Amino acid sequence: MTKLHPFLPEALIDSLKADPVTSRCFPSSDVFTESHEGRRIDFIIDPTVAHVECISPRDQPAGIETINRFEPGDGRNRSHLAARNGDVPLAYECIRMGVNLDVTDNIGMTPLYLACEVIRAMTWELDEAKRCRLVHPKVNDVALQKEGVIRIAKLFVEQHADVNVELDGQTPLTLTAQASCWPIVELLLQHGARVPPSFPSSNSFKTSIQRSRFLLIVRKTRPLSPRPPRPCPCWSGKLLSECHDAEEHAYPASFLCICGSRKSFARCCGTKKFRVVERWNSEAQRIVWRVISEPTVGLPPGIPESVLNHIRSNHEIPSRLNELGYKLVERICSDRNIDPAFAYALRSLLYNPRRPWAGQVSRVQAKRRMNAWNQLVDDYIASRRDPRRKLDVEIAAKIGINGGPLYKHCEATGCNKHEKRDVEKLKGCSGCKAIFYCSQACQTMDWKRHKAECRDATHGAQRLPSQVVTDQLVVEFGELANIGLSLDDLSNQLLECSLTGA
Image 1 (spheres, rainbow, N blue to C red):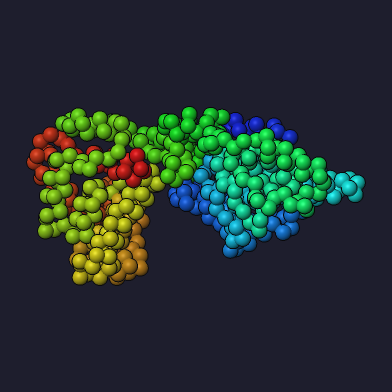
Image 2: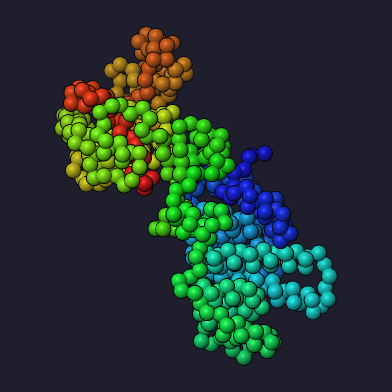
């Protein structure tokens, strides 16, 4: 069985297991399914997948037939699913992952509105069972599920979901009032829920007692301005303003590793020299993480103190790395042997991928670097300043996830075939797996030259021609060489800071 890594504190999971209302969610909650573990991995690579439409394969719960649909095109995400099923652990994890609680489905329901609709439907179903004196295990299941949905509605309101979303004249306030769910009614009012002008009408409530109770709560409850403070979505028990919005915190060791593997951070990148911290991002409205790979360790002497201080503090990236770095960049870009698309990306990003980085950074970092560099190459192509074909520019300048060429070339002497242009895919040497050929004939012809380096594993990873030239220019650049400063040592750290939004 696959080891699962929920984005929830272990203490919270234990408390939910011990709670009679939420214990029903174990182990049936979506949080503890292998399919949801795959979604967590996708989220690590691309956080926007947290908002992706959810299609539920599960059986529909009892009652609420009119709001059960989770079909393609319905536009509901996993917070909608949590609200429908009363899946409290899933609701907690959706909030931890930063799922948008104000997204509407194709009929206008937000997760909070759906939760309140479910509360009303289940209340009416339970009232009907009571009227008919129906005694059945299903009735108890519905009652427990309703309590779970009430917990979820409370979570969504406290996380500042929109309390005034309206659909067909109904709002979360009117729905919960009709369900006589008075604690949620009071909470909604405290968070600024408005009473619709037409509510309550003569037929809004089943009894006059309900109507009077509602009007009394409205008179006694005053909205707080601003809204009551938001609990931190890390579920530490602190307010957001006192927790992740106040300072950075260490990435939880039990969470899925940031590299996208199926291991926990503690058993994967946490064992290396990676330090990962997280903090609230008000623009993204979620907790975001960034990598700090001990940047001052191993840096050569001679780096200006101001730059060292910047690396240590990881504050915003300055507009210029330093005078020497810019001189080197200009020296590289002005060389006639450097591809113009490569030079464009280098000038724009101020990052010098002169050597492949396989095994030196996590897969997430590698993908981030590759995407940032290749996007600049795409921008260069879009500028139409280069008469070459698009594929030819990509072959000359784009990098792959290992930091080498995105499209490899045959390394047999005299052969210039490339992937995608001349052959679909090159094949690697079965011995060293570091050199590539377009055909068996090229490999056989090149064996005499490659035999020794294959045996001794001395063949380096393949590089773009511009990377080879860049490496030579860095060594020859006397001003930098005299103080022992490597642009890679410095720019690698600054690149990571800039790409992670530090």
